[in-house]
Length: 321
Image (cartoon, rainbow, N blue to C red; front, side, top):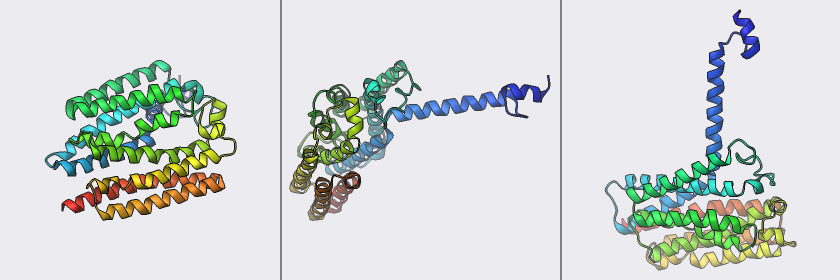
């Protein structure tokens, strides 16, 4: 049989079947890896790891950690990244039928059928055990325990509650506020006033952020039967007031690090400017209730957080220098 005859049946013209098979295998593996990466919700994970690193830097300045600090930070980020990957995988596993009903999620690996439930279950279990064990061995037991608590609250409390009550947002804000605390304890910090200040800032920051997201995707959430405030709030007034109320509460709370001596006037000034900016974006969202105002609030929230924590770390090191 000629090469041309073989290639017309199974491969492109003048290409060896073995080459085509290898190419197809490589493509399959690449697509499968991309599906597993999508399970981890990488954008959310990256933001969480940024706050972990900033919390670590702040705690390291407080405790005087110097020698091989980057090694400890690397261990902390690796372990926490594994736990975060597990949390996201459990979330998508438990919500696979809900995801199939929403436009923005129905092409995820599970509802689209690209990964099976047992594959995702194995991935979630292995990354959870691996991440918590890694933190326990190479960081400390407190950080490992808090990471485990974060996983349980996010995957097995917050995720099921979304189908029953709008209070799910408050519950979900607890694990969402723990990443900088994990960084704080990873560097040797205790669950003291500094850890509480970081937690409080992250806890309040999430509400305007999530109100913007939930408003943008309220029709999807409604179709899936999820109990989000924008779904049950027909006028949008409660959604907007929630965003404004929490952004107002965040302003004085963001001054806590300065009041606790973790930073000085430079940070306090930056927190004030950023807080007013966040409030104005929330007020505009309340007034207009448009796609533009919701997206503006969302982007403001995404810029606010690293800017605030970055200013906190910078000012802390300036005080110590």
